[in-house]
Image 1 (cartoon, rainbow, N blue to C red):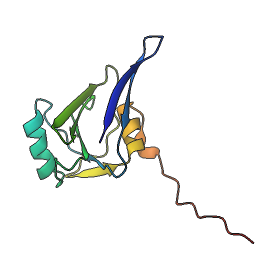
Image 2 (cartoon, rainbow, N blue to C red; image 1 turned 90 degrees about the vertical axis):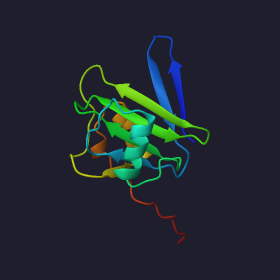
Image 3 (cartoon, helix red, strand yellow; image 1 turned 180 degrees about the horizontal axis):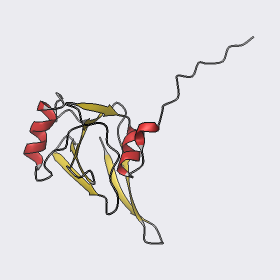
Image 4 (tube, one colour; image 1 turned 120 degrees about the vertical axis):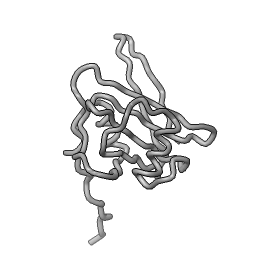
Length: 133
């Protein structure tokens, strides 16, 4: 289950923390969609374009045509949630415009939402346990 909580610091800057449950996938549709779409339209796109079940508990991201607006769709077990963010300056970093979508890690999602280039982040390889000699 995703936990989206807004926090406010003493200096008046607000931030959003998104915590995804282990095993939650983040699907990103690569082609722009109309940001006029709501719950039903984005739910249909999640199943048609991303070939995934929108009621699976995974997070689905969609981009606007200008690249400065995104919507996230999420089933929390009791209802569909729809979150949106528009950058006031600049654009989000998006993958190439291809059909279908890609799967992001939770860390890449956090970078994307902040407007940081998430494509250059590389997860470290698996760590092997040290052996006793």
